[in-house]
Length: 113
Length: 138
Image (cartoon, rainbow over all chains, first blue to last red; front, side, top):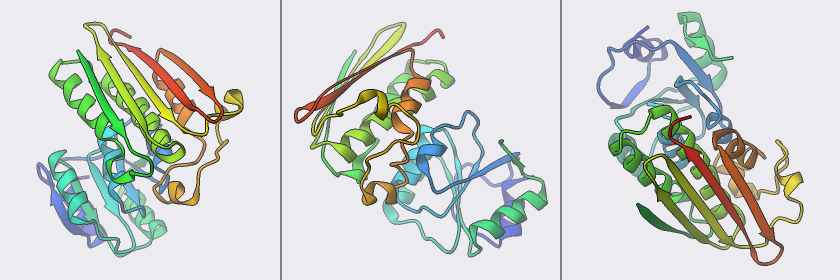
């Protein structure tokens, strides 16, 4: 599944498209707890309702480069600036975390655990 | 190579700047990306702890050809029971720390998982020092 498929499925806003939306992704992880994100060995798409500068910083440290903010949480300019420096893809959608995860799972994105 | 950074109490906006800078340096030195991730995750956790729990501190990093040594020393309340603090799930974090996505009692255990050597020393009312070492060839 490509990032473009995710954007279409979630009717998502693309805040940053990084190196492009045509590449494939296989796994996703949903959490508002950045401590948990920092324990991941893999690099899934992050689905989160936590929208602050530490979300982006955590992605940088954990080498995650795709984040989806749910429930219309809008990243600030500072967040987007840092995300752009790190070559990240930043998406946002209006759906709840539950619905977002349901749609992504239905499309074939796999869980890590 | 020696680098130093200052950590300011409650300054969550800048939490991770030291780790970010170390990440760039290690990438330039062509250190294995998996090792880089272990280093920066551990250092980031320590930085967040110093910002969240202490009154500020200092991060010192020494990079050799085969390893990195990181020391995060804070001035703060100290940790009365280090063994308890090392337990996953134990946390004394304030609500604003939790609002930033931290404070779940996973920091010290996660540092332990990512580094080859971890030494935590603390004096109540004075501060805490976290020393970590990661070998590049593990």
